Image 1: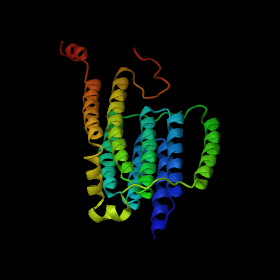
Image 2: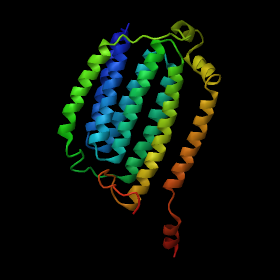
Image 3: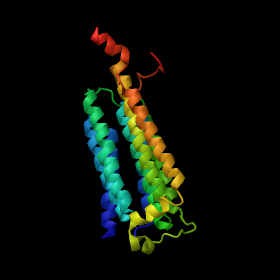
Image 4: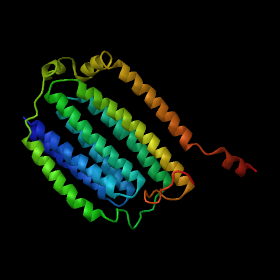
Length: 174
Length: 100
């Protein structure tokens, strides 16, 4: 049963990723990206990361994607005839070969390492959000504060960048 | 039980898709969307290793990735709006000057 769910989420997210890259209309690309984000959040649930599932749906699918769609519809882009790079066929073959070799190597790798203290049973005891919160506000408190400052700076920067220049406004008034 | 390598392979395929999108698409907004695909692939990797190696660190870093993706989207879209205002195009081939 778990394998069926994994196969569904994996296949749909890969197909949605390919559609995001290959569709012609930018709004359709945005909707394909939405499908990808939702199915990746399904993979998070399969990995016992319910808190990340919620964050992915709220922040990625809810906020970031709406920002993308808002800008796409604000700019009202016309679809170009040449929307791919001129040398696309020459890029696809090396990408396919490289990916095949990478997948071959990844499937063969044993992937082991030292285990941490958050076993599945320990995480399920109080829930994933509790485990993430305890770790975030003890060992990663400084990084958490840095991310807060970073986000504030990013928002201020975005507002300053997108603000209408003053000279144009005064010209319109005159 | 799903092996860890299955998640890593899904993540590798998604990352390659995003990388190809950055390289072949000419619309700046689609290029940013492809970057989001790559960030999501990295997040899948981190969460999968966090689950299979029984450590919480991967999920913490995944949360930081989502925060950074939000900042990147805000700044990138603001830059697109500024460029679009000066020159009516979002084609990355036509953006070849830092100042005009």
